[in-house]
Image (cartoon, rainbow, N blue to C red; front, side, top):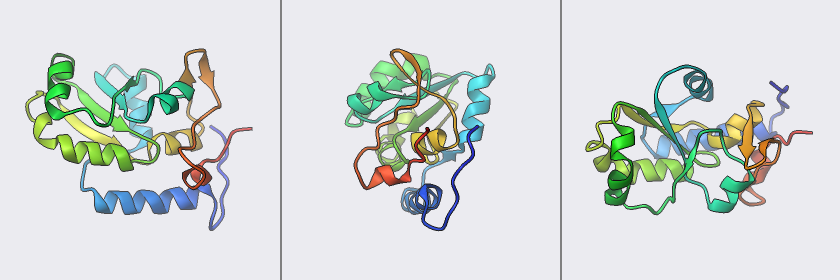
Amino acid sequence: MQQRREGMFGPDWLLDATITVIERTHRVENLATDELASKLAGAEPLLLFDIRTAEEYEMSHIATAFRLDQEISPEEFVARYAALAAGRDLIFYCSVGQRSSELLVRMEHAFGHLRAKSWRNLSGGIFRWYNEGRPVVNAKGVTDDIDGYDPIWSIMLDRRR
């Protein structure tokens, strides 16, 4: 893993502060990035959903993630993924966790019909994953590119050199 830049107002500090606000605002269950890495390396069945825009996803995403439109209805989600979700952990992420937390809150009732093992938000989203030096991929394979969402949010990224 790459060494993280430290500093009072560096990318990690800003990301940590943002995550704290998101997790206090949206009371959903969260999963740490190291826990996700362990699950992906093991044989535990899970479904990973990236709810960022198609453009963000195409630039890079966590390997094995399905892209999910954040506006999907609970009924459509159940119809599309019920068979795949049974007995599995469902992990949702976006850039830092705001959009995926909102989706989890909106879909909470529907998840009960899936027979899924659990449904959680990836704490810090793909930004935390990327800042820790973990791999992201696109159609060509592993990449160092990542979409910063917008100029404000992108300052939370510790760009790879």
